[in-house]
Length: 145
Image (cartoon, rainbow, N blue to C red; front, side):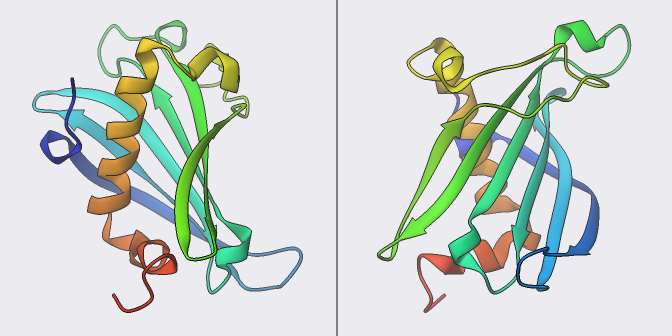
């Protein structure tokens, strides 16, 4: 079983845009998740500043990267992060397509209660806790942070 504290998060890039509904700044950050010497996944997190009611989208491209790895070796998984009544939760949702980097985008049903769940949640926890650009999201459920 993978423990999130043992995973490494490498920051790679970010982009800002304007939210269509509220005009607040929407952040999209990305990077890599690794376990010692091998890359496990690429990640993308999208959220709108000062709008916890919009939630955040976590997208993982899971599988090998680097020499010899191809699109056919990777899958896309997506989770929504929501805060309601001061309580936060991740929920697996149907993944958006990533045809340039992942052969398949999994549905919620293909992820929940499978062996993949035990891999995905530690990766998401590592990104949530270790990427400093997500400090605002961490405060949504604990405003005193």
